[in-house]
Amino acid sequence: MRKLMVGILVMVLSGCAGAGVERYEVRAVVLEVQNEAGSPAGLMLLHERIDGFKNREGQKDSMAPMAMFFQAGPGMDLQNLKPKDKVRITFEMHWQPETRLLITRLEALPQETPLNLEGLQADV
Image (spheres, rainbow, N blue to C red):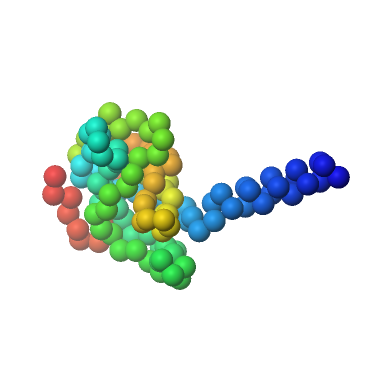
């Protein structure tokens, strides 16, 4: 009986941990690296279109290319990144308690990688 209760508790807690969090992968160009003490580390990125993005109401939509700040996940090293670098990121979209885009995976891409920014320019 005790094992059953522990098992149910583990399932309930693991199910709640990611409630309301969506994950996406997107390619982007780095506009700015923010790694200063006193503010959240992260990247200002100009990203490609994100098809299947869910808005705050949970409705599937498409997010057009735009510049946005993405917060670096715990232990993420941004030291070797600089403006104009191209990257592929996986991020979590958190709407509650505050809007936050959290990078969970970061991969540097070759500089010659073409990005479809639909006419937007990375002015860096």
